[in-house]
Figure 1 (spheres, one colour):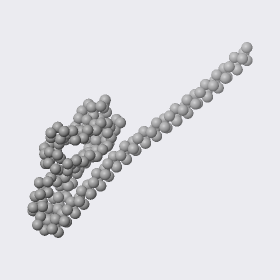
Figure 2 (tube, rainbow, N blue to C red):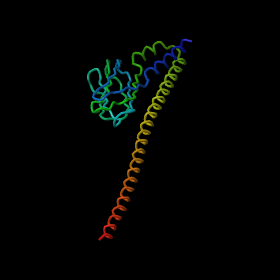
Figure 3 (tube, rainbow, N blue to C red):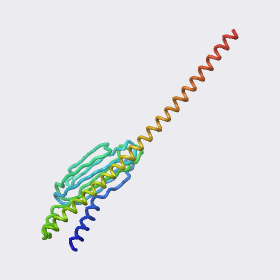
Figure 4 (tube, one colour):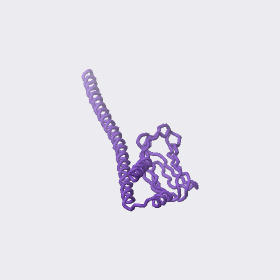
Length: 205
């Protein structure tokens, strides 16, 4: 019974550390998030711009010792994984300083794995090899499901962005076609009117 409870808590922990979030970054502003982790902990960040402007934003990850782990400019999506080289607070920042007046909607997912100390405690507590293997399999399954969920959300955002681009392109094509047809009709009527006036003047002379 205890191993069932521990596996449920492990699945809940993996679900909590892999949730996706949507935030709005206003023009000329920056939104930052923080994670306090131990040395050697595996971390990751995936992001996608859902709405706003040219669908780009500046992304920066800063370590506790002020070392720049990742620095991307005008990116629409990305994925970055690394291991904490030092313990402390890691900062994730999304900057929209380049935006003039359009806010950006960002979907992102911060993943934090188990720290080496948690893994050591887990190995020390585990006595039954079969239960340990089963826990590892459930953990891998939970991480795989979360990865699939994140990928589905990522694809849903990309589908929405591409649909918006297609609808905008279709609207522009239809508007241009109407403009061309209107211009052609106006030119035809103008030519008929000009020729009519030209022959009327010749007849009077």
